[in-house]
Image (tube, rainbow, N blue to C red; front, side):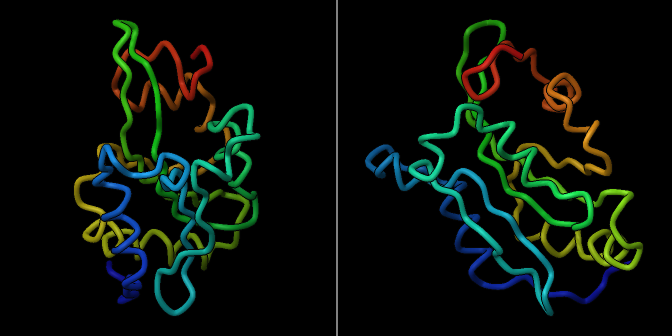
Length: 157
């Protein structure tokens, strides 16, 4: 069942910027994480660029820490990893965070609005539904990438 919630134009523009990274783009300005929330429409709550994460030791743990136990959110995450074959990859991950500890109405609203955001984010490599922080355990996450990951964000997986 669709909720009728629309996606803000800003979300579409940001997704397109994340999807097409040009070699001459300033690496520090690259969008790595976008937190989205529903407020009449699906809007951007916070954007984290590469320059915002320079002092962050582990970007994956940073993403995980953004997932609050009482709030549903959508995340667009530019995930950097290395396969066991030594191939470096950068793939977009869309996550719907709807923890069981958040209010039921919010979980239902995010679940029913997911199709609207997915239409906007066509081309995302991985779509994940995360309902418990245990789902973000590094082994569970890398398994869901369907790759043999040896390093996630520069750290052993």
